[in-house]
Image (cartoon, rainbow, N blue to C red; front, side, top):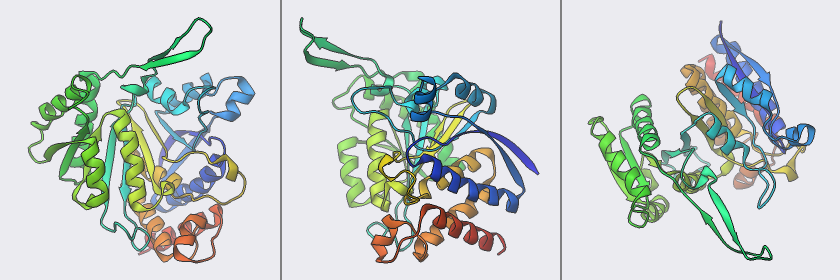
Length: 353
């Protein structure tokens, strides 16, 4: 029995019910494929802020330092005021420079673009998300302007670009495309593009090219099947990864891996949807597929493959799916947990084949 210890943060809003459903799938996979995960539970986000006055308590950070792996549910980030993003804080604290977001079409459900199978890898710690910004006020404190500074370094750009090429090799992919706005942001995005081609010389087996982000946005809604791995500065990658989620049908389908040299965090791409909290309503797919990415990171490749197959089969069959998928098929929806139970049943079936 292979054993792992992982920090678990259920999050807030719909996070706890999504995580509990995903744990049901992951624990069944452990039984079937011979591994066990010890979950070290901690809090972050609204529950931690209300209890401790801190959305990211020290004991949560210490647990991540000990285990090296964080599996978390979605966490609410206040808009315009309040505490800063917990996700951004974790990425900066643990130098999680590579944010990996795969978008793969699901048979039958992803009917508009059935051949999409691409991955957006964005830099996760620098540029405009570094939080270097300030207001310009008048004497009476009226805000008349604001300035945000986006810093791109050679060191981190090289790390995330090299990660993208190594990921392509590991996952059997053939092409890596850099996406940027170097025609306007000549110094910062220009540096990122230059580093991309320097690193690409070491990977002659992988095709390398680059695109302006506005052109890539157009290309992705016209012929997304032509692209494979996209590597981007932070803001560009954040926007494009939501676009690619739309190509396959829903934000509720897309997981995210946040990976550095020593630590990793896995979560769904979507938000916490607090208005649906406790209603057993929301789609657990992204949370479960974040677990798939975590298992890949831990080396449990066969279990990861079978869980993904089970998820895709349940969605393709369309019999036990949540409301966002059910309305596409015109069928009665089931709840979050009931969809998770259907995935467990399918996983058992596939593991026995």
